[in-house]
Length: 105
Image (cartoon, rainbow, N blue to C red; front, side):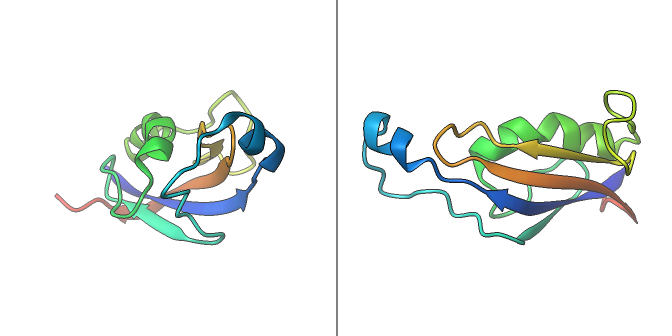
């Protein structure tokens, strides 16, 4: 099993949707552009948004166990995936990349 690097690549904020549909939040998304997490195998890294992890975890699990080439040619790097969290108000795009480093037992 391998480690997987998760990098925050892009962040969006749809204020028109927030103003119209969302109740005020005490804590908004705490991700920052360029932030890097390393998943030890399929385990959620400390500080990772739980909501984002729900979207990313199936791909992290697959990559950590050797899967590659999702959707037959989607990514230039076959051992990677570009995914966004499911927050419709402030989606965050993450790049997942399999590392050569083995996960800790």
